[in-house]
Image (tube, rainbow, N blue to C red; front, top):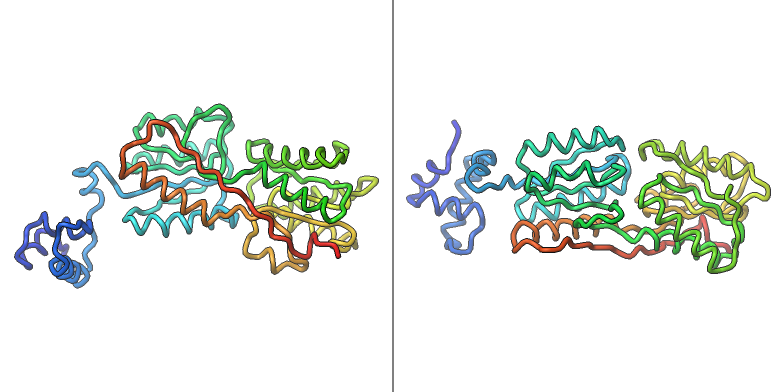
Length: 338
């Protein structure tokens, strides 16, 4: 038998409004009354009809998250943190992967819009902002995650990608490395800014690096990062003179690059030092623990949840807000030279 709010209210001798307020944790319901109501809900295993509630309140209590890849630890950690933070506010997360395909991303967004979401969080793989305009046209707040667009005013939560490239390269320079290569990311604002930080750090120290020392890792999904890292490192190892250090766009690419270096008989960091980005949970467990720039994925999820709460529960902001976290370097054996 399906139990309704009306049934619980009649059994306890209170109004439906009181039961509804207790469910929403409203302060104008006495603690004893709320406890009785919640106990009966638990007894009947009551689940609110979110679809019916959304018709009355105009809210679904659902937030959509679209990311390029759920295999990549960075986005998985963000999703985990975001979901946990939203749950405390009685919001729930719907997660989808675009597989780094702009067309699939657009399809996923349109499908989610049909579910009357309260807010969208998107780490977009689009080349421009045009494909995301439908979210605003539907009256749904949008937060860009990790990836922004040039000359586009939108709510954003992410990390300082320029600082990632600069931090990693400055660390390698401090270890005495002179020929520092970069396995760069895709031609997005994230990949471009990390490459700019790398180049500026070299320039500041008067180090000139041939163009061949910057190798593209491609536009493919992060799930094949190790394969792309091995391929890129193979190209770098064929150069003369060979690089004595490599800054990799992310840790999965760095893991593949390290494998290729080992296969070539090189010692890390003696022959070639390595730094990745992401500081993922396995970085310290590799054959040689990987130095990495921590992007604070968990905090990104928490800050995104906080921004969602502000957008939905308070007076709407007249201007988009941007939260940009500063990264930090975690030095391990792959780059530290004694």
